[in-house]
Amino acid sequence: MQLCVTMTNIGEKVVCLVAYHIFFMLFVWSYWKTIFTLPMNPSKEFHLSYSDKESLEREPRGESQQEVLRRAAKDLPIYTRTMSGAIRYCDRCHLVKPDRCHHCSVCDKCILKMDHHCPWVNNCVGFSNYKFFLLFLAYSLLYCLFIAATDLQYFIKFWTNGLPDTQAKFHIMFLFFAAAMFSVSLSSLFGYHCWLVSKNKSTLEVFRAPIFRHRTDKNGFSLGFSKNLRQVFGDEKKYWLLPVFSSLGDGCSFPTCLVNQDPEQASTPGGLNSTSKNENHLFPAKPLRDSQSHLLTDTPSWSEAAAKAEKGKVGMSNPALTMENET
Image (tube, rainbow, N blue to C red):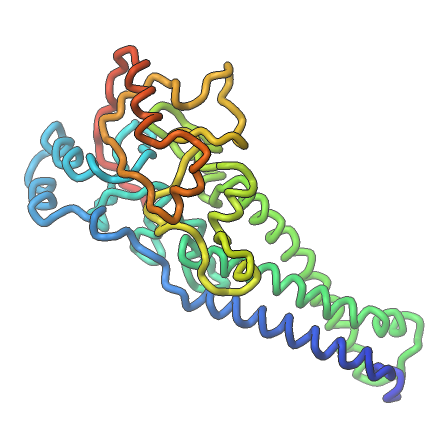
């Protein structure tokens, strides 16, 4: 019976043992990092000062509150707006939301580049642990595929009555079905998130496209496949397959093709690029952090793009500023 359910070749045993433990260790490592990496919150510059919070609470909704938000947001690197065209403000955390930041109702805090709150890891998946989450999906998929592949020959023997009539054969059947079913579900989820990375989108942005100053654009943050990939995995390829943080930026500011047109990004309909849009920049954004701005080295700087847009504007009015209550 022993010969029927074990490998006889020593080399095959060594290869399978080494491969199994590599996949298992990487799976556990990435899963651990996904669970225990704390989601990043907006930096202090996005929080309202004590005096601004008092003014916001004291004044009725209207021009007075809009003026408070103008002062708070005028120097922040933000490009997205609410559906009404207002500055995105969280009245639970008392801060101006950075681009791609959302308030998680489970964690009750604003999460930078929030993708979703995952019950399987009991944590928010966002800027700080999105790479770990992707690697967790990849290594769990490889782990399940490896188990299903190595168990396949014994599973075939089970159906052809090539195994002894013991309880062990039911364990083999259960192991194969469990590994195969998890492989199917994980492959679809991993493929979906690979598509998100290639388009530089989050799960939330798929369901509700980001709204910029001039219009809604579902591909507003996409810089082309290679740059989208580097934004998540970093510039140093030696760290891409390891669950160590290597993503570019600080999560508070992101390059956008609507401000800096990228050669890899298709032009907007009608042959007009985003820098020629008529747009009144009431809130000039700070330059991007150094770790992300180099993604746009082949394109005009944000200030040059803004200057061109300012020169070509035709007197469009600025959107009214209101507060956004989003959970």
